[in-house]
Length: 110
Length: 114
Image 1 (cartoon, chains in turn green, yellow):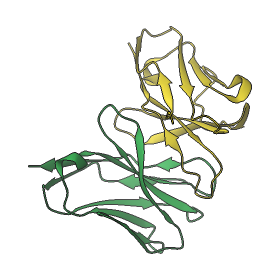
Image 2: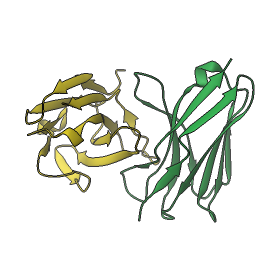
Image 3: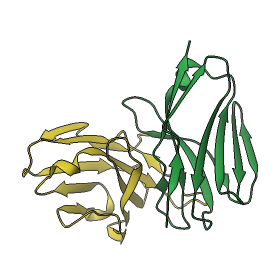
Image 4: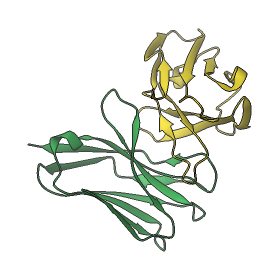
């Protein structure tokens, strides 16, 4: 079945790196996505990775994909207080609909 | 360019009442999606329109939910009659058909059924 799992909470100190993990079950996904939701706002696409890639770097963001283990991670370097938000991973499961995880609430401590 | 907009931002209704949520996608986006997040859980797909046609409504919980997209522009999602378990945040998203199918999300409508 389709299932995407994330840990619910992560707390880091400002300036440290944050690593948010996600596991998924559908190996037919073409793309995997990371979305960010700030309080009162919609979901903002942060980055995505094509399923035949292992890594993608975009400024402070690094996405790692382990297809064998169906594991996706998002690393945020030099985490800032403005990074505090809920982060959702999502897969497209080979169709147009997204399968989302539960979201990880990142809290950045000053 | 305006993003995806949703109305209302919040709605509080009593069990048994009817509520209609509206979504205006980004102009020119043929694909429109509805998702729902129940408190603390994952965001779940409800349905997908291509223009005015329902492409996939496999996520609709039951027949108390009715989605329409007349004319292929904005969409409405009606819940009638609302039940307590319908409380949550309803997100709308739209996309063109680019290779990566990036979906642009609205801010959501928070529905509370008392």
